[in-house]
Image 1 (cartoon, one colour):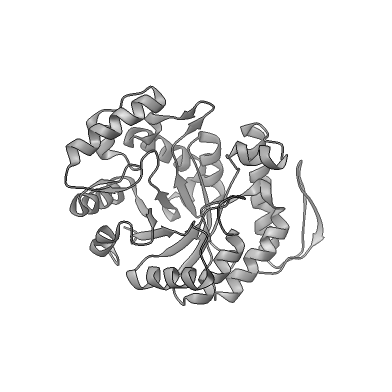
Image 2 (cartoon, helix red, strand yellow):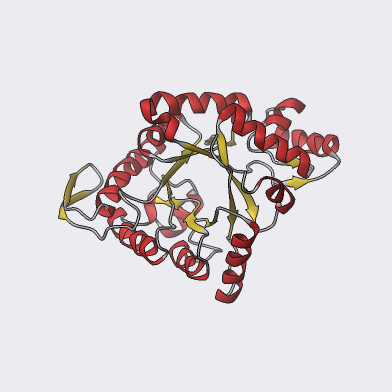
Length: 311
């Protein structure tokens, strides 16, 4: 089995001194990586934040969770990422998605294209990123990007830093199976909001099969990640009471009432005591091959991390 990789989230706007302190604490606690989201409002620039995190640490990996492809040309992004990878001595992970936050697009007048269009553009962007990071001359003639005899700056990790692609739908997970090194298993977001059933372990098994079909022989090489979604992580000894609250809240928000067992087993609902969550993460690794977990902000689930870090 793969070792556990636990990620912490750095999303607040803080000073460089404070961000460096959080990064060093993450490293000391045994986190695998400190990651930042990618939005245009309410947070530091992910590229700048990743650089600061890398400069403050020596072993902690850095990345975004996840970069919005529609906000940057992939060849320009590749130059920034290659610089971070070189300056960090090869500690960068590249996580990129098709974009989802429509109000952000609307605020800046960026067209929010239909999901298949954004996903097709992401597929082309991944090809451009890989070509740009190779350090070799390449050309690309797609519907959304055209590259002619361009040689980008190579990253420290060859042929490129580990690529993370995640999603909740079959199209995106098929792309991840073909192209990614790390596959993020996310809940499905529909036009009306969160699809509660996609939080369940049954839905997660189906997603993994989509990835398996697309990955073919390379499936065994893939790492799988999940993150808390639909409900924030909760350390509690009142498991029954918290589960009832989650069931009622999700039913009100989505119109679907999950069972107690579905909530307890969900790869996206981190609820219970430190011992219970440690057992749950071990079970998810053994039964589904999920070994990478975003645990929230630095120290948020520290008792769970302390039980499993290094195993």
